[in-house]
Length: 335
Image (cartoon, rainbow, N blue to C red; front, side, top):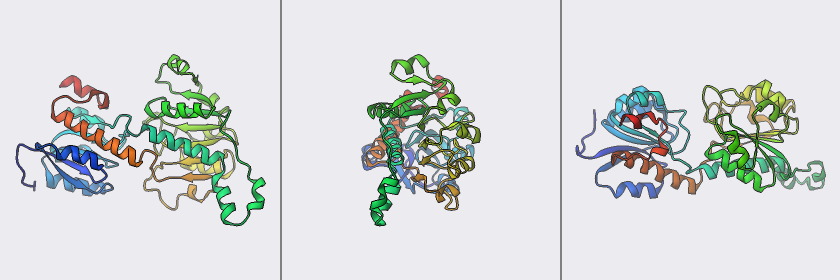
């Protein structure tokens, strides 16, 4: 049964991860009310919450899956706002069919993800895991057996030249790396004008790259993009970094490539199954570094994302959606 509330107020379900500044923005409005829920609330529990609180006009979400059933349970949904930029957990066509915008946080966490990609490249190149263990394990005198690499002069292949890929490219360029970009959906002239090499042939570029950093969306075209065949094209001294989405890399094929030293190492912020199963064989390898899908989550990014998510919702309520943050642009044409 829906909870009682003033009929003139819009109800927003808000993830508890919403930053204080974003909460303050909502508190300043007298035409909205908020209901907070745990950031990692299981999908079935979220559906029950929606049914209990309906009618619901909006929600700010992290990894929550939004299906047609959830949308319809809200009874009066005006907008879905992601606290982030990924939306693979959201059924966008179902929103479009109902005329509901799906909105993302723009560039709010793009610098943070780009920094994390650089951190993983540096950690791998400098062989930080091994060097740290030497200090702790009193094997200091063996350090010349674990000589690290510079990023200087190395070739990096960046997959995707959007909000995050462009920022990663700038950071790699600042480290004096040779930057190659593979993105078939971007004008190749624009890549060259930015000062980078357009890698139109992905397989050929993989054979040259010392580092590969993935920054493309997860969709039907990119799922399994890095499979056994693609990994086999990489140099045995090359490193693979994924701060995009799990599933773009075939994890079983990556495990075999790493185990057999077909590539030197990998930095993984994302996995096909999240939270990652502790039995995942990738976690047993010394040449893999990981983080729990935190590339875009810093204190600063959380505040920027939260503010953008709330501004997105309020822009819809006020009749002027921030168009650049709308994923399904078709709904704007219907408005």
